[in-house]
Structures are given as C-alpha cells and as structure tokens.
Figure: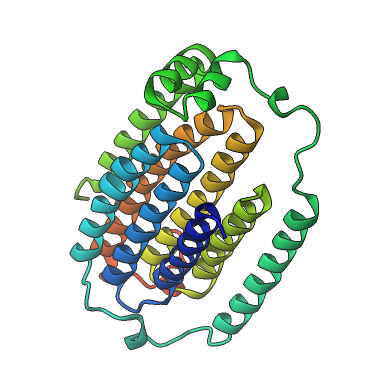
Length: 177
Length: 99
C-alpha cells in the first residue's frame, strides 16, 4: 500500500470517529471540541487534494473563528444541562432517525460508487485562470487571481451577505424592553 | 485514491450530520450537525475540483465558508435570544412561533 492510501484511510477513520463524537457526546462542549477535530482532519483532506489555500482558510475561519463563537455560546448557555435530564417527548425518534440515516448513506454510496466517473477530457470544465490554481496546488496567488477575475461578483455579494448577517445578529442580540 | 472514495467519505459525513439533526434535541448540537453537512459538501467540492483539474469547486468552498459564517452568527444570536426569554433550549418545546 502506498502512502496515499494509508493516509486516506487513517484520515477517513479519524474524521468519521470525531464526526460521530459530535452527535454522540451528551455534553455540548465535548461535541464542539469533537467538531473542531473533524474540521482539522477535513483541512488535512484538503491538503491531500492539493487545495492549500482552502485548507488554511478552513483552519483559520472554521476551526478558529466559527468554533470559538460556538464554544462561547455553548459555555454561556448552561453547559452542564444534559439532554438526559430532560424528558424525551418523542422516544422513537432516535431509532427512526438512525434507520433513515442508514438508508441515506446506503443510497448515496450506491449512487456514488456506480456513478462517479469522470469521462471526457479532464480539463473541460475550467478556464486558464482556474486551471492555474490546480497547477500550483491551490496556492494563494493563483487562487486570488482566479477569484478576482472570474468570481468578482459573487465575492462582492458575499460582503453584502456578511453585513446583513451582522445586522441580524445585532437585532436578535438587542435586549427586548 | 479514486474520486469515489472522497465522495463516499463526503456522503458518510453528510449522513452523520443528518442523523444528528434528526436525533438530538439541543439546538446547539443541531447547529453543529448542520456545519458537518456543509463541510461534507465542501469536501466533495474540493475533491471534484482536484479530479476535474479546475478550481471552480474551490471558489464555491470559499463562498460556502462565508455563508456558513453568516448562518452561524444569525443562528447563535437566535438561540441566545430564545434562551434569554425561556431559559430552556429544548427544540421539542419550541413549538409556538411567538415570544
């Protein structure tokens, strides 16, 4: 077995285990820490897929900024209040949810296993700027060139989205009189 | 590794997120499961970008990241304001659409 396969399998097992931890831990703080590990392992997947910039952004923004916000709220809202203390209004939902999840993963895996082949010329989808990104293993300069030439409008719309989100958070966070 | 390995990994993560949304009652953990689903889709975007030799997928991941950040900000503010009002964050009890 080559290094490629071994690293993929190790990463896949670690990612699945920590992702299961997110939904299995009783304490929300443990779930959040488990999610941070999942996001770090996904960043390693991105490095394996030669997307350097995305991997770094994943660590900085997701595992850093977003998860700090999560942990802040989790610790603010009574971290020791376990779900097991509350009474379960719909006791069968765990079993049904698990079964439906198994059906979903089976269906998705079947489709992907039989359907996921890339046919035709490999580079048919991209233009020269976005091909440069993959040629330089996703480095920041090529990524920036492609982003600001081909995707300028979505990028600007993103700033509008963030302003709306900030205003929304301000409205919700205001103390009601 | 073949493309389908990464896509099946992504499907697995997505399903774990779906199960989390279905079986947990703490809205914070439901939110984390939604993050898990977003990340599963991001993984398939990056994998397809690598195998198609085009960075369009990576651009999408970048935009999905900002959407996820905005979603987390608004969602957490919503949960905090619900908690302030009711001192209880069980989703099964949030069944009226007024304060």
